[in-house]
Length: 293
Ligand code: ADP
Ligand code: MG
Image (tube, rainbow, N blue to C red; front, side):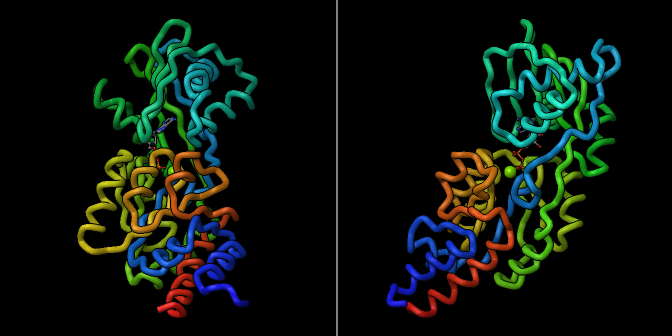
């Protein structure tokens, strides 16, 4: 073709299923020498499902009652964990009470007023910082690789919901390919708990794990590596990944389930829902660079 190499690289990347927002992005992608991957929705399929519902003794709630409270509060959220909770309620034909005053804190959870009471659903680590140690149920669920979500009613824990997601089938191959391309193991950055993160990391091979991170912690980790002279590729899907995507040398968002903010902030978007497209375009952009320099 008579196209300039970087434009033809964009076209090629598009055929591989990655949409780069400009030719400059292809050039920058060719320079990356370190990779940080988000967990939920990036290494995993992003369609987690509720696996266990445990109302706490004394809460006066049964499984459906706990699910109704949590799903009512989660209903407006676009987070994959929220969708899992709402879908579980729908599948069990549990009617949702009305929720008012919805707020969400990226990387932490949601809050709403349900039947006049404040309901919070989110990270046990964050929520129990305010309410004392989380129950044994949390540890129990996390040790088997589940994400435990704590439900509080008027600041008291009323139950724990276990949620699990499947690893993408090309996750391990992608981690291996990225390790070969950069000469370093990718780092797994997650807001989820350390136990579930390590459980998953063990299945994809060699990754370092940074768990329990808030969105700004993910960005700070990336910024630190950038300051040390690395050129970091960040791959993520969530609102919680936006600051890290912005701090990265190059940011790629997972397009299918990606939040609007992640898609806007990223330099490129995976439009075919396959992780393996990422090492493919990194390799491609290196070839394109060699043609222009
Ligand atoms: P990841 O980095 O794996 O994509 P997030 O940063 O989105 O995870 O979320 C980190 C943690 O915050 C979750 O594991 C969960 O405990 C909690 N959390 C975030 N959003 C929600 C939500 N809408 N409902 C329940 N918990 C949430
Ligand atoms: Mg995510």
